[in-house]
Image (tube, rainbow, N blue to C red; front, side, top):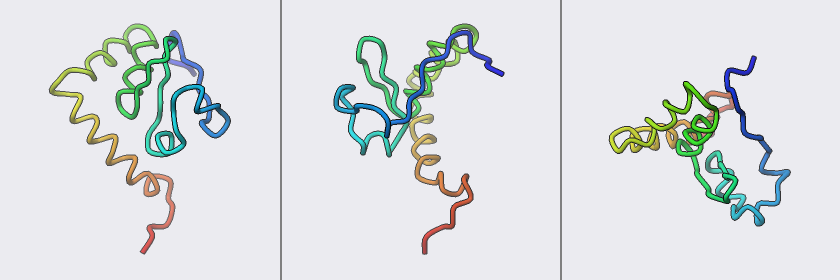
Length: 96
């Protein structure tokens, strides 16, 4: 079930011409990337916020709130923590 009115196209970075988008494999491995229609790039929690903004009401309100000065740094730190620990969420063994 899709809860968004509008959903941006999602493409695996491994199947994309990254150079044409102005991205590198390292950026894509580190965080989710969002490339807007004008070529603007957002990464991590900012990319998630952009997806919500594009999704339409009520999600675009949440996306805009994610850019507030007091909220944005918290979400960026949280995103980095999740990205650095994603193997734990998938059940991958923790390297020794």
